[in-house]
Image 1 (tube, helix red, strand yellow):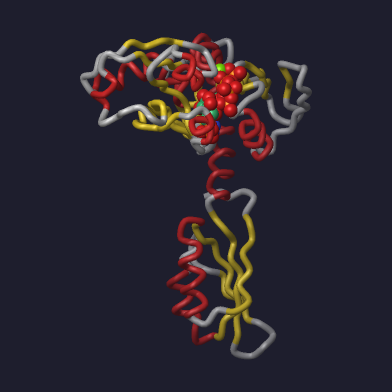
Image 2: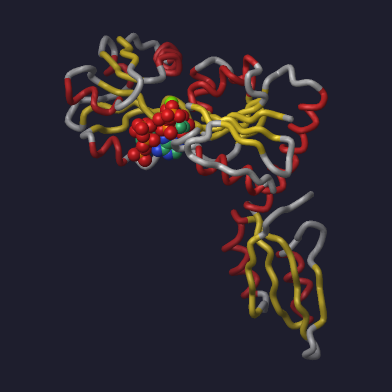
Length: 283
Ligand SMILES: Nc1ncnc2c1ncn2[C@@H]1O[C@H](COP(=O)(O)OP(=O)(O)OP(=O)(O)O)[C@@H](O)[C@H]1O
Ligand SMILES: O=P(O)(O)OC[C@H]1O[C@H](OP(=O)(O)OP(=O)(O)O)[C@H](O)[C@@H]1O
Ligand SMILES: [Mg+2]
């Protein structure tokens, strides 16, 4: 049995649960239950405050966990990181009051800055040669300038709407973050095997999310041009249609190149293009 720690309730919770389920792992989750066992994989899930997850994994209370890089690096435990998961993307930024004068980072020399991330902030200020007075608070950081607690804040930003609602202006990016899978560094052979199985499934899920299955019809003389546009996993599948001189081509395209490829396919003579999501993709 391998023990996984995820956030109980917050910005990491839904996507962490979704990823585990997409790996084909089933479990019951009730909001009041802080520990559950999967029904079809030797996995126990602990639901915790995100700040506690790196420490629990480092100590071996949990074997693996899902946490934001911001929390992991703040706690000095980046060596536990195993895999970037691509969700809960955000940044740790410095912000000042909307009307405050700000030229560059040296404007914060001697000022007070409220944050929940004193280590990341100190490291950034040191790298810029700036000295400031760091006030560590555990939440509602964005309120600090308006109540006279600090001149600036250093907090998590995603859309930026929390900063705007609190009359603040983002001025520097201190750290970029996303969710990561972390693991204890002394897992026994059995747990290591389970971790490898989980990683294999996560990679299949991630690969599938980045790809689309494309089915199209084309006249046979367009096939060479279309083949060049659709490299697929090996090469596209070509199936003759009932209509003489026409074929159906099946392939996989990368999400990033998707619209550009679809445009070129049409220009090359493709018709009736179907684009289908892929659930799992094993290399
Ligand atoms: N607005 C956001 N958009 C995307 N990701 C975010 C956002 N805010 C935070 N995150 C990421 O999600 C993590 C958890 O954020 P959340 O706000 O739920 O934490 P919290 O309030 O400290 O939760 P907990 O109660 O578990 O301590 C953060 O450490 C960060 O990595
Ligand atoms: O740039 P935005 O999209 O507005 O997101 C940023 C906000 O999101 C997080 O808080 P959250 O809403 O998770 O609440 P919390 O303070 O209770 O953690 C973070 O602490 C910011 O306050
Ligand atoms: Mg927290």
